[in-house]
Length: 353
Image 1 (cartoon, rainbow, N blue to C red):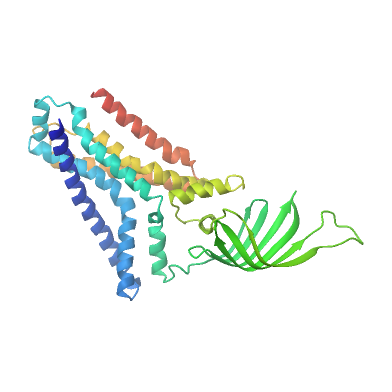
Image 2: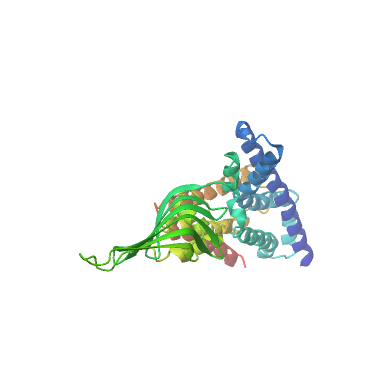
């Protein structure tokens, strides 16, 4: 039992590595040639760009490599009559897929964990490098609401945790009760530290011959706890990326702010649920592979399986785009198709037990 599991696992891993490296090199090569004239002049920056491109390619290449590896491995086993030999030895059909499915599932979980790290921002870093402003990238004229406060930031440097010219309007019962302005601010210890602060407080009831607004000056003031620079930028930038951890932080921070969280949910679901497409597709395709090549054209069969995989992957990818743009709910566009694919995969597994 252990011998054939080790063998099928080794064959699957071998083809997965070969296909993954080939697709990675193809993606990096095409991207580099396409943007050759826009690459930085420095050799170091060019190498960094190539590295970031390779990391970006993993998002597209990894799921397809896991599925294509099963197709190539099983077709070669069929061509060499190895699959028939295993069945003739009395090995159950479900047992033969355990090793490839487990490997695909483990690789997918590792990828999901990786998406909770700065790896998720590889594409953003790549774009920043192309415009020669990696760490100094700024977002301008941001206006948003947080904790009964309306906040205007003239200039934000999310990677540095810095902001210039901040205005915060305190609101109570739809009335402005005060204003806080600061020329500079820095995000430290999970809160914003404002420098050279000007504070204006308005009375609850404005009446003639009574005290008007009260103005004071503070050297430093800390507020907006938990309002991370990356959260601010991602609200402002419609095409910005999220890591899983930042997406969870954003949902927690903004859940009561009346903001449409569809894009954040779409990014979170696509990072956690969409990668499961690969191991589930591995399970589904396995049960439709022929046992022997005597009655099938294996080359044509391989082509059909590849096309079917690309079509299903493309449909899921389009549904993610629709979910991000608010055309459909993220739960329907991302989670529901994966659940249906998973239900179908385990139905096939149950039928062949």
